[in-house]
Amino acid sequence: MDLINNTLSVLPSSLYLLMQRVLNGFYSIFAYVFQSKLKTIHDDVILITGGGRGLGRRLALHFAKFQPKHIILWGRNKGPLQQTAADVESLGVSCSFQVCDVSKREDVNVNFQHAVQSIGDITILVNNAGVVYGNLLLEGTDSEIENTFGVNTMAHLWTVKAVMPSMMANNRGHILCMSSMLGLMGLKRTASYTAAKHAVTAMMEGLRQEIVDHPGIHITLVHPYIIASEMFAGCQVRFPRLFPALSEDYVAEKSVHAVLKNKKQILLPWIMNVLIFVRSITPVKVLLPILKFLGVDRTMDTLHQER
Ligand SMILES: NC(=O)c1ccc[n+]([C@@H]2O[C@H](COP(=O)([O-])OP(=O)(O)OC[C@H]3O[C@@H](n4cnc5c(N)ncnc54)[C@H](OP(=O)(O)O)[C@@H]3O)[C@@H](O)[C@H]2O)c1
Image (cartoon, rainbow, N blue to C red):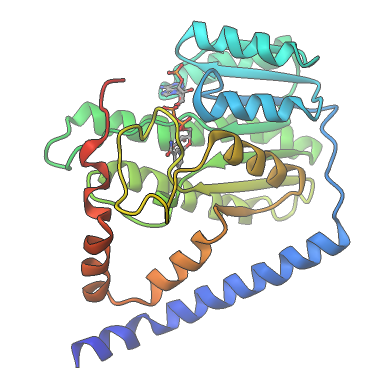
């Protein structure tokens, strides 16, 4: 009886989700048929947070293939920023970097002003920097929780606030935020990370409505599954052949493509759309044993914490 009640209670939201997915599917087909051309970014100045290493570095190199006017990289460590900037320049694209801790509002605002004064308005913002601590909520320190929100959520708000005025004035711009599948679902040992990523998902939903009168501004939200980068190094899934980690290049290529196509949201890989839908119609009582069987609850137990 409980099972039937649970199933009935999630039915309206599941139907809504199904409708949303079906409509998104139709929209993608429509967009593919009628606007299959990629937009050009030759006049764009791109700012990538966390651009020195990991996915951010790959994003910089993939964007560079489309010859933007300039790429600015932000991160805390000069070495990787310098290396990535040199590699981008070797592809014939002007590139600079700034040492910037995006969790610090002052740092973001000061560096942003310098960037605009020396290079010009930022027309594509890529909020990519992120951090994760694989602790149970009661194990983690308060400063880890604050840093998780500082980097994964607050930085998005500060950078979006910084770029929006010029984007709105010129009715031109694109904001990409790197969320995660954990911006749509939860996972043991990532309570603050998932909360911070869900916050970004919600921020983008709100922003989407705020820019509705500015058709020249686009936003893209990316939700990747586990990527084979440093961030989730060591974490394990029970059936790796079924759910292999994504390569940084795959995620970077799909993300850049989503920007060039003005896509609003992508889940990577695409099959995650199905997973999210199935999860939404499965009662929690049924879901928990399934997740346990799949070993999802142990995924983060082996995360390498040294960073
Ligand atoms: N890896 C995954 O499995 C996965 C899955 C889904 C989504 N994501 C998301 O993808 C994005 C990139 O992750 P990744 O896999 O490339 O992780 P990563 O290899 O650990 O790289 C993290 C990046 O964030 C930067 N960063 C961290 N704290 C910063 C701060 N306070 N200020 C400025 N930059 C900071 C780092 O640069 P510095 O060290 O130089 O500061 C680095 O460039 C993140 O938003 C992450 O949440 C990752």
